[in-house]
Length: 266
Image 1 (cartoon, rainbow, N blue to C red):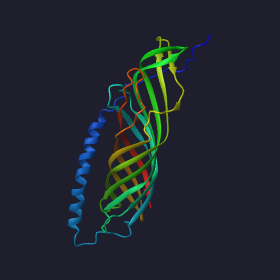
Image 2 (cartoon, rainbow, N blue to C red; image 1 turned 135 degrees about the vertical axis):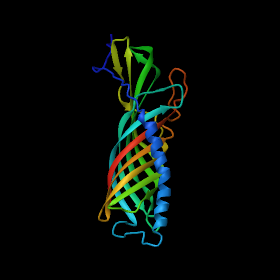
Image 3 (spheres, rainbow, N blue to C red; image 1 turned 30 degrees about the vertical axis):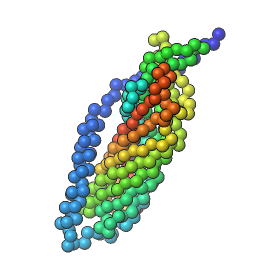
Image 4 (cartoon, helix red, strand yellow; image 1 turned 90 degrees about the horizontal axis):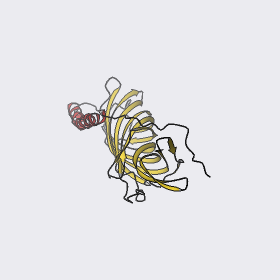
């Protein structure tokens, strides 16, 4: 007789909610919309003066950055339900050439690596000790690594006492490098069962995101240290093969993320 194998840990699902995020995003969007008007007013007020300090502003910047993310997967179908938010990591290299001679408008691109986690719950069937068992509220954990190519524009104010304020918006083009998943569920109110952390076929190979953010740069000679707060929305997460084993209906979901990044431009 085969024995039921169970994990030695208790599955815990927190009730953590990100209630502050809608307000934070609205403030971020409002502030970003005002930034171009502030830059235009600043440029107009200095029309008869040199607008570029060549000792502080480069025609092209190269940079490195790293930071944590808060990510939450929002279902767009009734087959799955949202679980608590998770933490991730974003890091990469940037190239930012100036688009105009005044150097307050830059093109932003580079190569980025994103580590993204997500959780959903749904009804599913599992083979347990040779019998097919239907489980209510199984929790599936996803882990994904993306190679991301950003294309965006960045607005920058003129340096004032070594301080520069920035705003950026654009698209993230995400290509899946690896993706894994495992399920957790209760059985007979006694056991917490966890499946193997296997490669996932649910995750789409390509996903498009839009992002926007505000930032601060501190001038150090011709280089700059910076910190940014960004919001991104990934339009799709699942591919066509991600379906319910009970109803055979497709999964659907988008990914919301907040990025807090720190870096250096040189």
